[in-house]
Length: 123
Image (cartoon, rainbow, N blue to C red; front, side, top):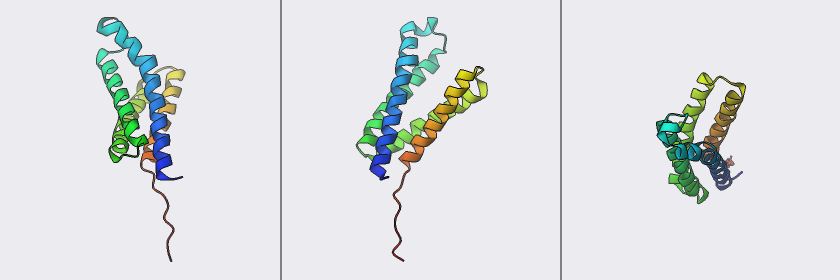
């Protein structure tokens, strides 16, 4: 696999997760507002911000820009912290399964962002 392919896969995976996050968590809680939302509103705003940053980073990574790959690594590193926190404090099996899948996703995306092509030695 080439570096450009790896970056484009990482970008596509991050866009998928960001859109799911915006559609299923961020927008419904933003519409409810700070008073009616079950989640702490700071968490909702932070989640929305990280999802928008992921979309911007994915754009840069898709265009093979170094800043896009770096920002994508930073966003997914933040998401790893969220996934580990969920693994530690969530209670239901579905939440634990989701956090586990997200943890694997974030590690895979970071791995793709750091992907290097193998160089054949001349010896």
